[in-house]
Image 1 (cartoon, rainbow, N blue to C red):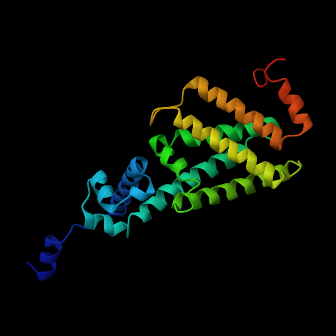
Image 2: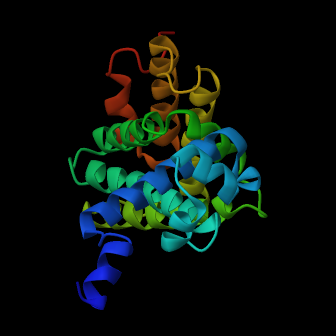
Image 3: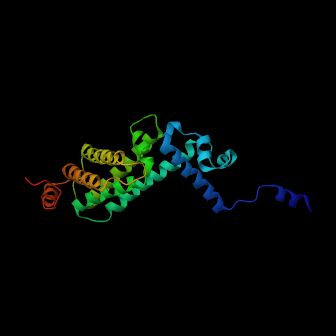
Length: 226
């Protein structure tokens, strides 16, 4: 037996690209689970490898510290939110339905986060948290998408304050939905329906026109009867 073949037998078996991606995904998934319990400030490599059931050297083969897989978690979260809203805004040219689709995309994004949504919202406004920076990038992307869509439809571009008010209200209501439900479970259907109507009303007032409001007044259940 040659020295080279002996070294191959004694060493670690070669890892395929698919196996490497599976381990990396396992670490990122474990990071999301730990973040859901502790937030970013309680995140550590020790907790992540315990959650993932991996050895410390395996972790460091893919990431240099606990923050790196958290960035992967937050990248995926931002991509999901912005991508969902991009798809929603491309789905119709009817203004009121446009707003409704945007809201549904936001709620669908939140529903997919399960227990991770609570610490995510808890750190949105914390300038010392990495989550805060991701939130600002997501909002910038969403603002650009809304302005671009309005321009393509020949509608007045929303004033910055109006657009921010609409987005922040949607964000707050989605947070209220998550806070009012058990971790990992869907919001109460009645509460979710009420929240959706509230968001539609806010978007109509902040981003809509007189014609939009007139059209919305004919939709059943959107406004209370006098």
